[in-house]
Length: 342
Image (cartoon, rainbow, N blue to C red; front, top):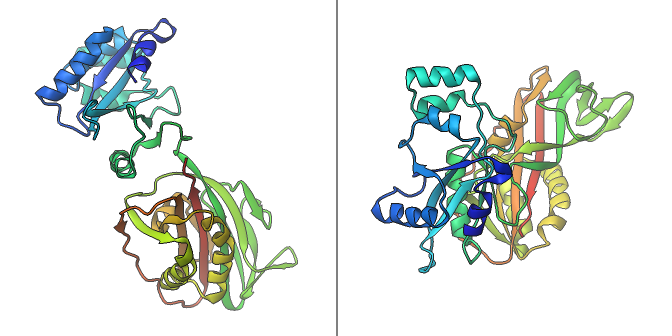
């Protein structure tokens, strides 16, 4: 990490300024002494949050990178250094003049910053000598989720986006009913073909689109990873079927829907001795809204996020809300995403 600081100090000839935040640790005397020693070793320009003139900083430096400290269990390296990489900022000439005239502080200036890189809020976590433990990973991800910042760990692909794998949508109505259904974003795959939406007829439990019968509407998509990783369930491979049968029934899937779900996900979940499983269905509904005409009387959306584990871990159990009773025109969806371990 120190080599990274040194090599990046004047990347492409542009001077870089390092700002140290107190997101994880209050920067008291011993923390500041640690930072001071490290920064002075390499002659890096730096300051602590709120201790610099933001407008002057943006005039003199082409890039600023923000850092924070987190406790480490390693006695030789008492902290883990967290940093935003890259953390690019840009002000227009008018914004800079206004900032200088009004003597805006950093908190006032922040909303005016223009992002010039899409990965501006991508935070990479790096350890010193040892990989981060699962507890540390969860702690750091909780920090990022609190700040609504996308994050990944060293050696892992960015987790700011993930695949929504095989969401399927069932529609039910006792008598034939014409419908139009649109998703909040364009799917990457679909069947039947999604052409600015699906239009067809539901009759009982069958969907009729363009003269053909379908059991459900299928799609896949890429979605932002905004799922809380601090709660869920750790399930052993041999307990997967009974666990899913119990939870899916509580969440509102009937026998056929549960069978469809389990036969798709069981081979994937069985690849590891354990799986961390959570059902952030409400979050997914916000990420992938639906517009169905006519509006269903009952909507049940079940979404699972899973991650394979070699060993069990401790995690806060997720409290699941039972599904509503099915009445009238009913829409049911299930799907999921998979986090792959290193």
